[in-house]
Structures are given as structure tokens and as C-alpha cells.
Image (cartoon, rainbow, N blue to C red):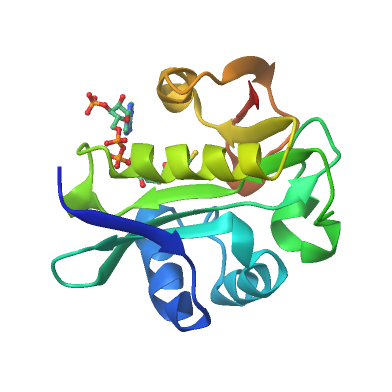
Amino acid sequence: MPAVIIRKVKPEDLDRVAEIESICFPAAEAASRNSFQARIAAFPDYFLVAEDKTNAKLIGFINGCVTNSPVIYDELFYDTSHHIPDGQNLTVFGLDVISEYRRQGVAAQLMKHFIQLGKKSNRKNVLLTCKEELVHYYESFGYVNQGRSQSNHGGAIWYDMILAL
Ligand SMILES: CC(C)(COP(=O)(O)OP(=O)(O)OC[C@H]1O[C@@H](n2cnc3c(N)ncnc32)[C@H](O)[C@@H]1OP(=O)(O)O)[C@@H](O)C(=O)NCCC(=O)NCCS
């Protein structure tokens, strides 16, 4: 397990965050730099980064907004005006770890910290959408699969996952 610091995003992390996203997701699914700039401005409290303690390099991140919707819908990804600061449900828009650091529990650390944020801010649920191959991974944190999502983000098939807090 690498020595990792999980911390809140800073505005100066923007370029590296956008770079990590472009490494981790195909172009049709990757959020743009502009999108990250808007998200960091709108909900910095729900945007965590993982930093390698040995060299301060950013190696991953997790982010999402707050909503009263019971599921994630595509407009949430593109328009930060859908963020409802006192809403019931925290969402996960993306969980990214660069390949050299994968399968060592870095994403799990990011997810656990994010779930704690949801608990501390008294949210009812954490919501995310994922592809079929990662359903079992999110189930390991307690998420329950609610079946096929209406989202067709990036032209892919997604599953709605919900974690009751
Ligand atoms: C998914 C991702 C965030 C996992 O990061 P990580 O730091 O390697 O995750 P962890 O070390 O906490 O957990 C690893 C576990 O995740 C699961 N997993 C990761 N990628 C997987 C894949 N492509 N298929 C199936 N299971 C996978 C496995 O259960 C794996 O455990 P194992 O090594 O014992 O098989 C990382 O692979 C990534 O950034 N992928 C590209 C972006 C992405 O798909 N993000 C998820 C969006 S919903």
C-alpha cells in the first residue's frame, strides 16, 4: 500500500485532475477541464484527491454533488446548478486512480473518506453509477445495485448503486 494523503481539492489541482481523468476514461466519458473547474468552484467539499506522500504527486480523486434525486441523471454531470447544498443524497461522479497505483487500495481509501463526508454532513444516501464489471467492487462498500440506469453517459450501459448512510 503506497503512503497516500487524502485531502480536499485545491484550485491549483485543476490541470492534474483533468489530466488524470483523460488517462482514466475514454474521451466520450471523460469530464472536461472546464467541467472540473466548475465542480471545484461549486462543491469543493465533495472533491477529494489522493496524493503520493513521497513526492506530492496527485494519483487519483473522487468527486460528486448533492441532490434530492434518488438516482444520478446525466444533467448532474454537466451543470453544477443542479447541486443542492442541503440535499439528501451525495453522489459520486467519478473515482479515478492512475494505473501505476491501482489495486493497492487507493480508490478504496478515497471512497471511505467520501462516505465519511456523507455521514458527517447528515446525507441519507450516497449514489453512483458504474459499469457492470465494477458492481461487485462497490457492493464491497455496502452499495446495493438498483439495476440499469437511465443514464447513457458516453454511450455506455450503467447501473444505479445506492449506499444508505
Ligand atoms: C476503478 C478504479 C478507480 C479502482 O482503483 P484502485 O485504486 O485500483 O481500486 P482498489 O485498489 O481500491 O480496488 C481494486 C479492486 O477493484 C476492482 N476492480 C478494479 N478495476 C476492475 C475492473 N476493470 N474489473 C473488475 N474489477 C475491477 C477489483 O475488485 C479490484 O480488486 P482486486 O485487485 O483484488 O481484483 C481504477 O481502476 C480506475 O481509475 N479505473 C478507471 C476509471 C474507472 O473506471 N473508474 C470507476 C468509475 S465508476
